[in-house]
Image (cartoon, rainbow, N blue to C red; front, side, top):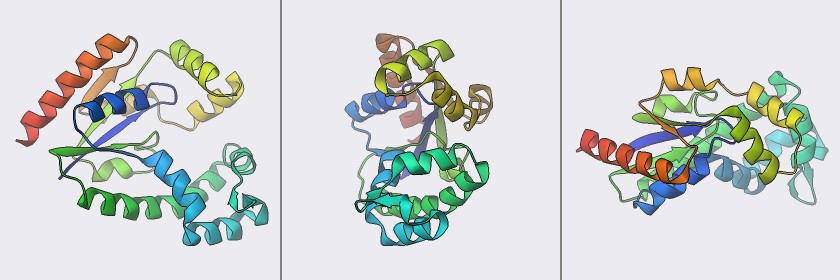
Length: 195
């Protein structure tokens, strides 16, 4: 089973692109969603996060996201420590998920595919890009957030240029119809590569 990494900066439209691949019959593993889920359901993660950040890491038996976000987006060291707890568990979960799939390849969608080193376990990588002003516009519409908070997230991610340099395919997500054409083209190329 070939593993194709799908990444891109916050607001680039990874989810939109993932859905388009899914419509072509490709299973998608959305690492961020699975990580969030595991942070609430895995006793291993829960215990380690409480040991690291204290009892406030969980509130009403659920991950206290605002509390953790304040810590990790202001401390690179805390972010690294949290990732060292969560990512190995997500990697195990992903391995199990892949073994149950039946398709020419699967997509592993992750905003921080390069940042956390997960790209090394991918056969090919697709980076989704979009102009920064469009990304900002999307995020301000989608999330209850501020330009400063978006900028803090962007500052914690690799630049598009750095991602593109290590990618096999790039999808520029400005116009939905054009993006769909790029997805189809990329899918066809991957199928030919792995045939």
